[in-house]
Length: 196
Image (cartoon, rainbow, N blue to C red; front, side, top):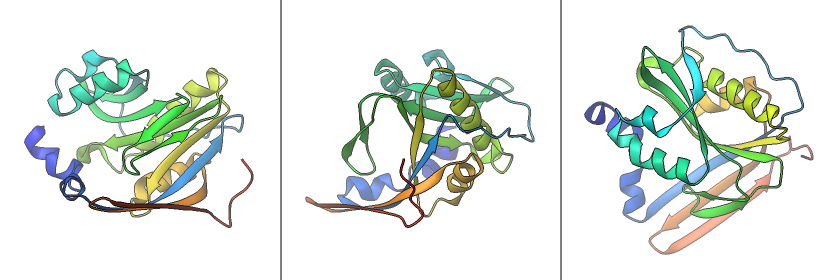
């Protein structure tokens, strides 16, 4: 798996390590007291909370998964025939570090931040990310979490489509530029913004 997917998963990291970064993303939000749409998918998968044992066969993911789980984040995985087909991470800590923007965001009590959702290429276009998102939202709704937040790159249409299908709304446009040591972070409310 390492050789097959490494270039597809992390192509931007090379320029980031060189000190060059331009990130443009939407902040999506959704109240969890609203009804969560039911998503039908085209393949039989089991969605479950992740444990470190689930990542044993995936050396590229194992260390990061262990770090996230030990810090209290939760991982949700879609399992097909014993292998991970996709995953989505969630954090409900008060301060969450966003690697893409090289800064922390603050969450209020009752909020969850969803991040780093990924579906392996062989399983895309089957509704898997939407299903992961649906099950994750149900999980947090059962814990009386009030609101879910997520960022999606403006160029990445798949998660935007999924967020829209699950009732999220775009509330902010965020831009981050880094050239060597120079950094600029900018965000603005969108016209479609409703008070969350």
